[in-house]
Length: 164
Image (cartoon, rainbow, N blue to C red; front, top):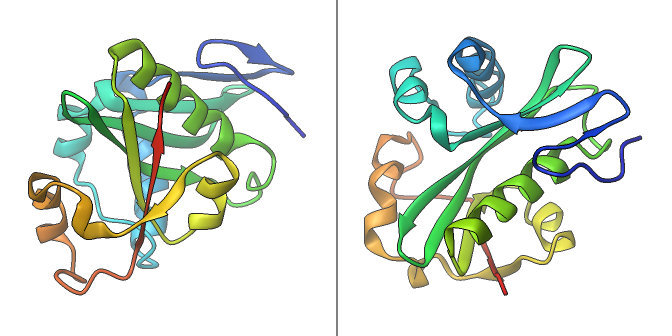
């Protein structure tokens, strides 16, 4: 089990790093595996290429075990999105390492608040996020939600963390 991984560090052969173009197809397959089950919003390949700078990957021994993105929404607000961990790698620190990397990057950018829309709020709450009502989020963040088959009846929970 991997306990902590910095956004640029290695621990036991594992590395959380910024994604690069060659990672896009693996990110796509990972995200799609969750989207097919209705657990995540579908992300077309062209969207992933256009937003590759937002993504981190968790790599161990050359294999991508997870991905996550930090999307800047406004001067003081960002979203953790597309958090996906391969089956068999869950519960081993992959998701935590990815979210930690996103939060570190948010701090570097000076972003004070980070939110996520999730079906697993308990995971985020363990990391210091708190549950919030979705209606406190600015309307402009709902642009991607229009693409979702569940819109406007979203059943995800909203969580947010205030960064110091």
